[in-house]
Structure formats: structure tokens, C-alpha cells
Length: 348
Length: 77
Ligand code: SF4
Image (cartoon, rainbow over all chains, first blue to last red; front, side):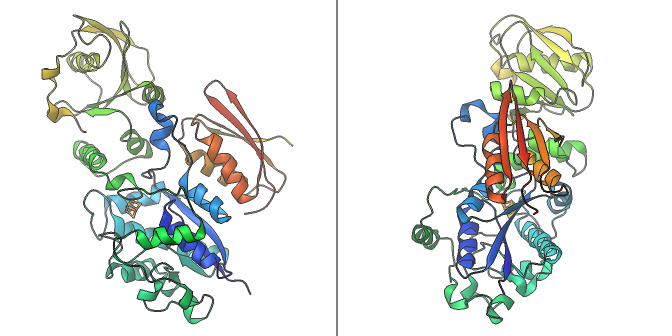
């Protein structure tokens, strides 16, 4: 009887290799990929025009195609919020709740194999590879707290761990699994060569934006100014786009497009946000995130936005302020000088 | 058979792919889905998804900033 396994596919090399190791043993493998909203996948490429020439492939789909397996993409945006907002095991260097995230994903995969009649779960985890979620002490935590226990097999480091059910039952041959450990990527690269995989994705920090320091600063700022840790998918998408600028002590911030692609992307949000657009000169679109601005605040915001358009040195610039989904009205202001926008206003 | 239309405009990949996948799942084999999206990434991602999952890509048409993609369901799951 052919055994069936589901592989957690992030789009990186480790999950690609882990799945291939098990496929080679005659197990039927399918992939599962979770969409949290924070994934680094093609988004910024899709938005920013200057990145247009880079391939916009989705790495998880690419991996599945290399392996010749089906890929099930699961939208976990709603359920994942609790992982980001209340991680039981805390955050890593930034707002990345890696350990809770792993537990959650394996838990979801465990539910999936029960629903679909699959036998076990594979991940590309390697002991010691990542500081938070892949330590020797934390790998058993993932297995235990997800409920998957010994149905969770890590083919790349299985020989360093106690035998799991698939090994004990002989569904897979433990001798043909691996004993990788530590931060070195050399064993993975050698195995990739052996299998003939090239052109695989090598994300530097991790698999999502939560490991990014600048992104985490913007998310923390959002929570601080909302007075609660809460977000919607649109919020976290917008944190990936534009220049974010919060004038000191203000309850509103500006999201200013840096180029045409971003302007196009942000204009899709004009129905939900107040916005500013330069009329008299070429200039970016800016969204205003916060309560409805009064006239003085609109002039302040307009003077900042004018600074980023072609009229930045003109004595006056005309802009259009629009309430969410409403008709615009004209505002004429003197653009702010660079020294009037302190560095501390930038949420990098 | 009239295609089922899905509006995935303004959604970034992989959301349009997820919308397509979830729309096809309950439908009988032979059903046709037409998805409209604005993220240019769909030109790569939806064909890749179809190849991987054994579904048929009938065509991609670009109208201005929009991509209209037609897919026929060939197999379950
Ligand atoms: S980097 Fe992001 S997706 Fe990856 S384990 Fe950490 S929190 Fe989860």
C-alpha cells in the first residue's frame, strides 16, 4: 500500500529537498502552503514597477512543479492573527513568532491529513538552522504542541531525532534520511546538486516579512497608534508599500507612493482611505491612515506630500484632498523643506 | 456551460490563485471558471497552478490592466 505524506512547502530549498527525499522512497507526496499575508512572495515585485523585470514566480508553485506534486494553498489569514498578536512562545529578533507559527502550521497540516486520509507530515526543518524555531529543544515542542507528535517527520535531520512512526513502521527507511544540523547550508546545497535542482529561492532572513526589522517597526507603530494589537489583511499589505511617515505626536500617518507602480496600487485603496494627489505638478499619490483630518492637518499633510513631487522647490503646489470614496477638493500649500521633515517621522 | 466568474481584482498573488482553487473545489469536473485579476503575477502563477494540479488553462486575455483567465476543471482535488 502506497503511503501518503503532505509536505509543508514554503518555497525555499529545505522544504523542496525534504519532500524529494521522501518521494524517492516511493511515498506519494502532496504539498501544502500557507498564506498568512506576511509571505515574502511576489507582492512587492507585483507592485513596484522597477522590479518588473525580475521573475514574478511564486516559489511554492515553482517547488511543487520541480517535484511534480500537487500543491494546496491554504488561506490562513484570519486564524493566523492570533499567532502574531498573542504568541505563547514570544517573538524572535523582530515581530516574528516563529515557534508559534511552526506549531500552528503543523497543527493545520495535521488536521488536513486527518481530513484527507494521509499518513504523515514532512517539514524541511533542520536542527540549529534557525535561532528560534529550529533548536534541538524546540523541535519536540512543535511536534507535541501541534498534536502531530510522531507523525511529523523531518527528513533532513531525522537521524538526529528519535524515530517517528513512519520510520518505525517501515513506511520510510531511516537509513536513507539525513542528519543535517547547524547553520551551514552546505549539506543542503550538495543535496540540491545531487538531485539536479538549480535556481531555487534562498530567502536571506526567513520566509516572511515579520523577520524584517523595518516591517516590524511599521507594524508596531500601527498597533501603538490604534491602541490595540489588531490588523486586517489590507493593513499588512499596505505596510509593504510606499514611504510611511508619521509627523510627531499625530494620530495619522501618510503612505506616500515611491513610484508609479505603487501609485497604481495605492489608488485601489482610495475608497477606504483619505488621500492626497498633486494636481499642479507630477507627484505621488498618498493615503492618509487615521481619523478624518481637519483643515489644518490637511494642509500639513499636503505640504509633506508636495515635498515628494516635482513641485518640491516651487513656491506653491496644488493638491487634491479626497475623503474615503468621496469627491476631492483642492488645497494649495508651500511644500515643506527637507529640514522640516525630521528623520524621526519616517517609519523606515 | 456558463463559466463561474470570480473577481480577484486588486488582490495580490497568491490570493487570486487561492480564489481560483477554492472556487473549483466544489464544482463538478468539466466546470469552467473565469477569473479577473490585476496582479500581473497571475500570468505565471495560474498557469503553473493548473499544470501542477492537472487542470486546464483555456486562455489568458489582457484588457487594459486586467487579466481574464479561463480554466476548466479536469479532475477532483
Ligand atoms: S519567518 Fe515567518 S513564516 Fe517563517 S516561521 Fe517565522 S513567523 Fe513563520
